[in-house]
Length: 306
Image 1 (cartoon, rainbow, N blue to C red):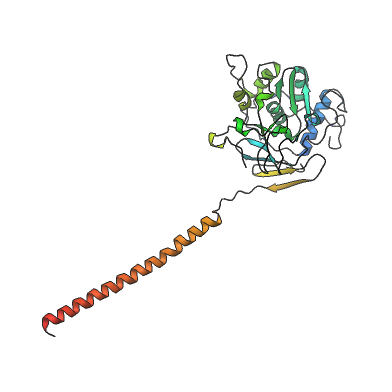
Image 2: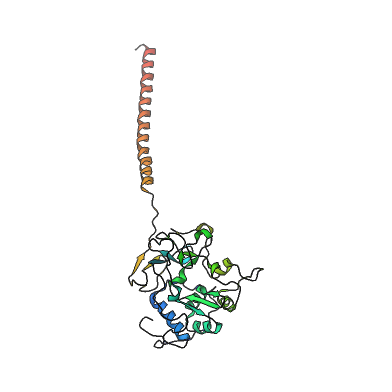
């Protein structure tokens, strides 16, 4: 954990966050130090210092095997984008590297007490209910969002369903693995993020479940879009390599909207022709007026016999 073990950290205990939905806390793109802290807190909550419990051993920096970008400049908030082409059939993420399981409510509550308010909100936002408890990924895998429509889904069980182009957001179907039927985790999550209305079948609709605390996605953006130092702010990006490559790059995201070269040539042609047409019109008008005046003058001379 960043060179400081769970036993060497100075741990504090915090009150349970109940206002995540209304506090407007900053949703940061976390640096590696924060992920280290979250993993150490998990180990501490187990009463150990080596992460030997089920799901907590052998933590890696992250579970990705491919380079990826983390940005917060799209309609879904913090998101994961492919940094390069990912061929169809690629298994790009191992949940065993960084994801942990909570089988009982008390275990998750003990963990949350070690986290300050904003990190509690993040954990409860990212975690999901399973048939036997709850799980959460303590790395950037928690930034992978739900695809609102089937055609947006890029992968299933962390294996790509098609070629993923560079710059394309990775989206999955939360309905494939989230248990929306209730349970202690949904109740605990509801205390922080607000209650959900159940359907007649007894389970919360997946869209309502995934939208609990999520950034609202406008209809026109419901389509696929073609660590390090301090936490990043809106408009910045972090490029992260596969976990075997420690190099990380921070870049500034710049959006420029300019006409294409073809459009530019049309604009040039259109507006360079305007002065020429105007000059030609003025010259022809002048010559025509001069000719009329001359004819009128000659006619008047003939009438007077000059």
